[in-house]
Amino acid sequence: MGSVLQLAPAQVTFSGFYSSGFWLLFSGVILGAAIRYTGLGNRAGALLSRVTGRSYTGTLAGIVAFGLALAFIMPSSMGRIALFVPLVVALADSMGYAAGSNGRTGMVAAAAFGTWLPAFTILPSNLPNMMLAGMAETLYGVQLTYWEYLVMHFPVLGAGKAVLLVLLIRRLFPDRAPDVVPIQAMGPASRSERRLMLLISLCLILWITDSLHQVSPGWIGLAAALVCLWPYAGLTARDCIHEAVKIAPLVFIAAMIGLGAVISHVGLGAAVVETLSGYVSFSPDNVPGNLMALTGISTLVAMLTNLPGVPAVMTPLAAEMARLTGISLGAVLMTQVLAFSNVFLPYQAPPLVAAMQLGKLPLGRISLLCVLLFVITLLVLTPLSLLWWYVTGSIQE
Image 1 (cartoon, rainbow, N blue to C red):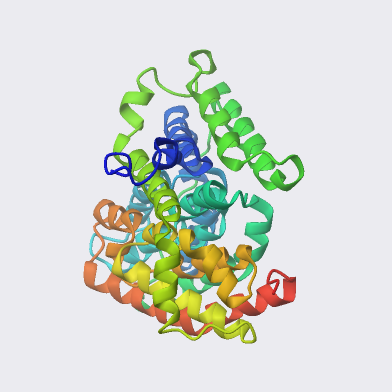
Image 2: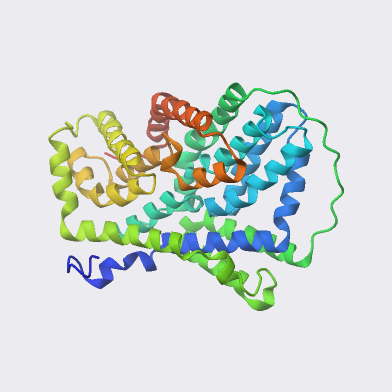
């Protein structure tokens, strides 16, 4: 549309297709297909049944922990949901939790939220993260490093929210202890499984050390995807591209990144900031207030649109926001994470909607869980996150 209306040059309009965020999404889809094809997903399910424990609370904690660990090795949230939720449904059956029971609902909710919500603190693991990374690089030449992003957000919004999830789900969906699941012996890993585990391990090491080698996480993920697609590697099916790769999500993220570039190019960001500044009193002398105001604006954008809408709308405004508030550009960009990691209702998050369909989760009770998480995050975890930024020196005035 930007090219048709002559709002911006083609290289600006289509910049999303060569951003790192676009290729992170692509690589996540391919890695998810490889995990399913090689049988590594089934092995992960067997491992899950060993670590969930014999109490209901321990089961929920094990599922959330396993889902969060899965987010470190599988970038695509949709892929994790598609892999993890059916495994947990099957595990709930084996533990004696019937369809519609609190135990099954709680376990599936723990799988859906646990592998998605705390993963906003892991750079390649969710769509808004990748959009933010791609747009920050496209608009400002700012490369978000895996390790710095993790240190800045994971201790509070990652680990803290994971603990909060277990406590809230246990409270909202109480049930008895699960039946004891007999542990089945697993055979040795196949050659394809070993190859994929080695590839994922190497990928994770390179992501964690990206501040040292300066290679973008998107290009690391793309290289791993190409290895998975290599016919002689035996990691994906011959028709993987046709079966696993859905064009719509890829075009969506590219379009959103390109939209941000067009907004910046035509100067709309500066106009919007000027309007907002008339309602919000930004002052270079009030950094905590500025940070809360920026988070509030981003949260409102997320509620009016959806979570990926936050980086699409807010990233082009970041430079002007930094100028008005006296806060570093990097810190202004990171306030978006406080917003898009806090979901008010399920409609804001396509992965959550997909999980509700796969696991047959009740809309009303999951909406209540979202609202409680939203309020506690806004009142408790967000101020703690800002305090953590000060302690770690992440905010530069």
